[in-house]
Length: 142
Image (cartoon, rainbow, N blue to C red; front, side, top):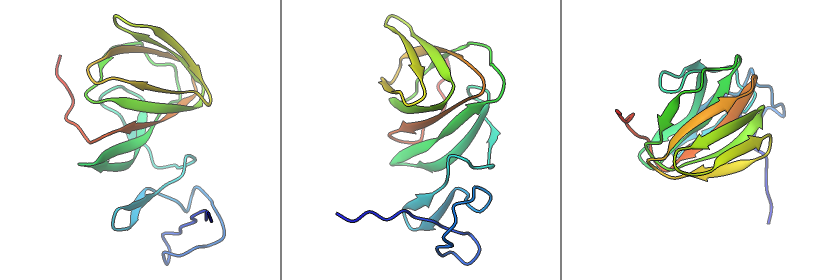
């Protein structure tokens, strides 16, 4: 099997041979093909859980992006609107799952939590994770 690393430049839309985060932004480069970089500078406030988020894909068949905190946030319970699977890229977290275990996760750790789970995250700063939901969702009201 042959695997190629995709390098995309929004200027001209072709391989530049470089992977600078200043050149790579979340975008659909071909129908259904989305490209970004974990070192992106494209972040926006996350009104749901605080911190900042970078969305790679928000569609009926997937919701994928990253969350980061530059400062330690307040720990607040959050009910998962869909199953969430994540990978810790920077920092660490203690995640209390209501009625379940407390997870201690750090760089390189992955976990998957069920829809409806009430979680309280205690994160170190700086913190960054990439997350995957099976579809985009409307925020739940408690």
